[in-house]
Length: 468
Image (tube, rainbow, N blue to C red; front, side, top):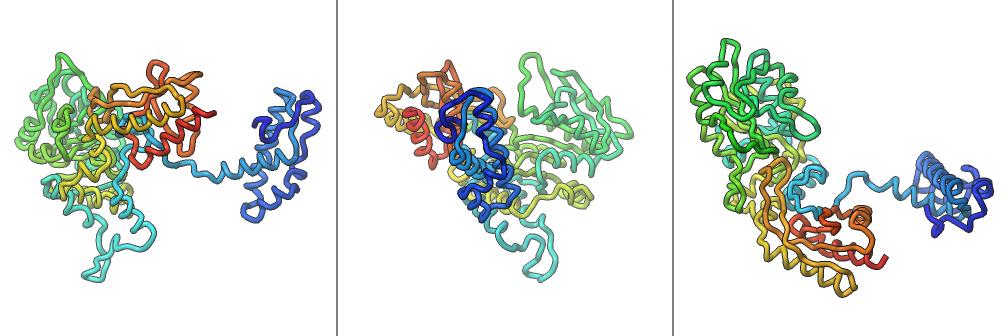
């Protein structure tokens, strides 16, 4: 808290501390008492304690005294801060499209509208309107999942980790699952595939080496207790050099000969060919289905571009077993997410994903379009005397997808008078916060990941801090 709001001239630490009012006196101030009309006493009391604690620290450290009016104003600020949502929108200027820390994939306007519509009223979530009796929530997505994947059946749960957990529990609990040693990956937050398998009740059997695994390694490991072969796509890292892994075709052929099921965890799970956008080819859901995998699981909020979900598609017999398993209820999808996922899948069915789904719209953006937006920001800053330029840079897909793959972009590079760290920190504290990246002591803002409706806010934030 600075002297500009609540501070007065310093008289030394002791005098400054003695001048501070009690909590009761501060609460009795007319401006503070008025807050009681719209806030509970615990909220106002906590704000008073925070304001006084900050004033005590300023008094001890700088000998800064505070007026009663200034403290009342600081208390009101504390109340407003306490009311502000912890989870709130931000502007992603990092150039990382699926930014896990920033909420992963933004959803389409249609998906957001569908989620709001069912969340703010009643819906036919588990009601058959035709029969006038109880229905199933799985029916809303299954037809669409079949159409976009080519699979016999589909199911959605609350995230991809729970999708894999459900598949293992329903199809391999108490039995062995064979997996290549190099696919025992760790995903975000320290969650590891072996730990998921342990919780499912399946027993892990590792085969091959870190960098090379052959179909014969799987064949040699199969025994009377084997239930499934599991492939996990290494979507968040890449092993290069002297490598080999058995193809999914090899695994499904072997499983068919031995009476086993094949589970394929794709992680991001793309419905479009990433190679068409100048990226490496990411394994596609349809390819795994065509190869004969019994169950294919992937995320709904990564390359699919929908709300958080775990999607399972595959053979009807296997998916039906998943639906009947008790764990399916524990990990089921809520009504809003079902609505958002349904709307997202319709974009793919209608062939409009690259226009309507934000993730694919960002991937498909041309460099000229991005450069024009960056030039707009630069021009506004130049008029205000701020040093900035448009530079060539790289955007990343992110979200554990296409490791090492980037897209050419253009970014606004701002060279602040003080430090890039200080400017980045001020931008993060703005409303709405703007998260950028720092390169060579410059703040870089990549228009590829800035939603067009935020362009004006980016310009205003930069101009505001240029003037401060």
